Amino acid sequence: MQIFGNKNQKLTILKEKPFKLEKEIQSLFEHNLDIIGNLTFVKSEFKIKDYRIDTLAYDTEANAFVIIEYKRERNFSVIDQGVTYLNLMLDYQADFIVEYNESCQANLKRHQIDWSQSKIIFVSPAFTDYQKQSTNFKDLAIELWEIKRFDNDLISINPIKRSKSAPSIKQVQHTKDSALDKVTKELVVYDEDYHLNDKSDDVLELYESFKNAILALSTDLEISPKKLYIAFKQGKNNIVSIHLQNKSLKIWINAKKGNLDDPKKLTKDVSNVGHWATGDYELTVSDTKNLEYIMSLVKQVL
Image (cartoon, rainbow, N blue to C red):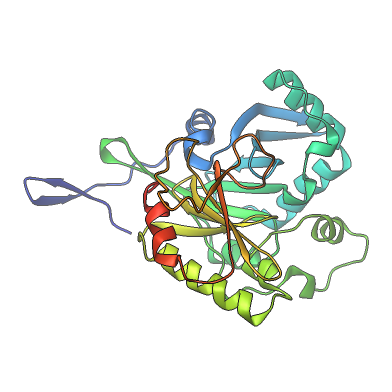
């Protein structure tokens, strides 16, 4: 991918300025975790047993811990280290909770954490084809993010997406009771199929109608399945979220109370009611009768 500067309609190629040290990447991430990944910074160089985790973060939407490791060189095994660190987290959950509470001055309880959504992110200027292929499993909680720095202090961060045909890690033969076996049993990477499974044809057709209508609103919207709903994100922010029910869809629009113009009064205020997704506006639909109108509501938060 080439990056260009534009001055008076004249394009110039911006040269890459490689990071000299892993610490440069780590510092950049730790100061911008909220912007980069909507994550809360917990601890730098977190020591647990004989290991040292580069960055410990927390995903408040998933209620799960995220481990981040930085690599400037490419000759390392993402699978071996990733599985080791995830297994370490599952074995020493109490240590992670204590560190969060002490560092963030919080009172997080064990039951509030969804350990199944824990994951590890490797950040590097480049990954080998072997590293990309070795993590190309739809249900493996290991992510690869490429980061590059260019002239004019431009930074690009590119999470590497798994292929649509990525297999399940459970199809790979590995020793029973091994660290990989434990991690794949206890951690879940939620995808659309998880939410669509066992739903009726009517609900699936209804979801496809709303999904296509939402994605047509903007080219930069992306689907981000969570445990309880499917979020449609613009950058780091949820725009609208959908939960598939037996006969209908429950939809949340991510706007604060008083900030959505809904003359038909289709939505209800859930600002003071417990609900799964982000946003203070909720509605339930069982047909596409108001599809165009609902899209006009979603447009207000784009």
